[in-house]
Image (tube, rainbow, N blue to C red; front, top):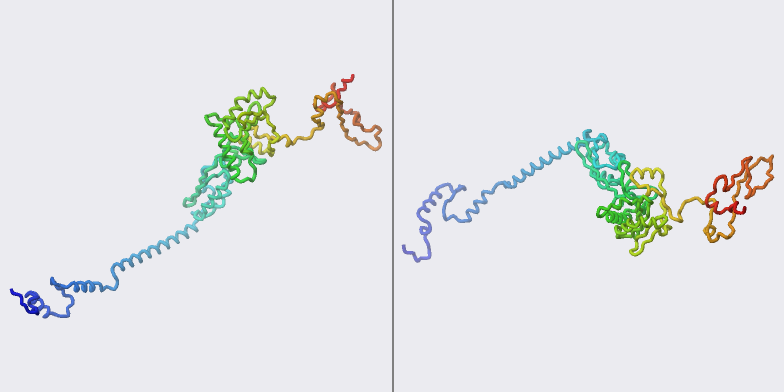
Length: 430
């Protein structure tokens, strides 16, 4: 069909005959109908957009409604759970079932040296208390304040039971601190002597009462190094020591518990095993060479000093009899229980007859020896019998018929060596 060259296009050319028939039917039907599905291939995209808008005429979207529904359900559940929790809390707070009735409800494990009295000082306040209101962290901190306790843990078990686990410290030596004896661990913490166990440790000297733990820690480090070195190779030389003096870390001194007599050995600050072996090798020869072996200084590599000056020995406080008995029961060696003092610190009573070194000098034997005169005590007599004979140092007064005792070589009590040496021999001039 030939195209018309005119500028106008007729309606018949745009729509086929079938489309004309549909338009006539629509025109005859109700024009106000809104729900007409036009199944025309040439439908405009603008009409589809208007169709989607007409489907969302609901007052609340479905997704939002679902969310609100879930929120209401969750609020109801939370409200119910809160009410149940409040009821359980009131029940747990007021019910007698959750109270710690006695010490039988407190289970303690891991104790060997900690006494029950020490534990009850901390845990005794929890008896009769609600199990849920016991401050576990606070109780743990208080238990670790006990010297023997290194760490502790406290747990509650429903309905009314506490479980306490104790980890005790491990002692490595005895420590003499002032007038008392204690046990000490590797970190320098002091513990009371345990009446239940007996240990075989040396006694550490040089610890002062009231000093901080930071001061004792380096001394204990030197002690551990020395013991580890002496016991290396299975020698177990530390078992022969009764005391270890750590007052001067540059000169560690040990007292050897020798059956022939205890000896103080200076080991210096290092090379402990080699120096101690020198003592073990030559101790017998030194005892034969010297009249008494008291101390040996092995600090120097090319020099050995036997029986050095002991005037610098520090004075230690004497142990009371009760402390000495407790220390002996705990395993302290007898040599470590003695209180040794220096030459200038000896608490010895002044002798009745004191002789100087000049008087005891053998070179002065030709000189005249002074006569030691004793002062007689004054004897009170009744006024009816006046004293006619004066009291003389050469001829002491006598009481009644009992003569005064005289020091002689033939009879009577023998004088002390100092008196006998100072008095002239009566038989020498005869």
